Length: 126
Image (cartoon, rainbow, N blue to C red; front, side):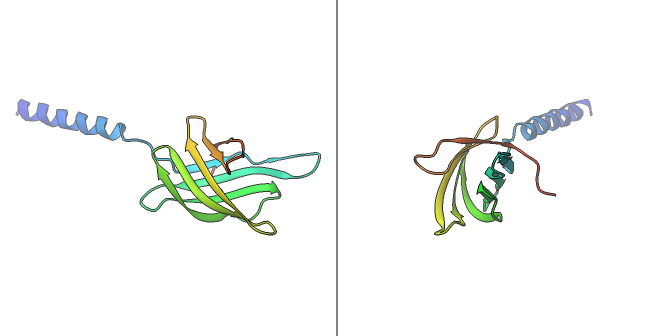
């Protein structure tokens, strides 16, 4: 009886440590949208990531004003993400966005000559 209890306790501890060691997913909200007081412009980006079997992102990139958010398919491999976003400008601009997940948030690059920008973890829309 005591041997069976010891075996069950070992299995339980092994199961708990394995569950605790599972890698954390990247689902979440990342945001750096700010308002420029002098001009009233709104700039930055907000990306809500949904990983899983069919990952996607809900994206809003603001340049002067914020357009409606767009749901786009995403490719997530390890700590990187990539997606294509159509900026509703005249004419519309296609942005090929790449990024990487870090401890500080999501670092995005929206084009080859664009600087990287950090989007910090945020709260989902309510």
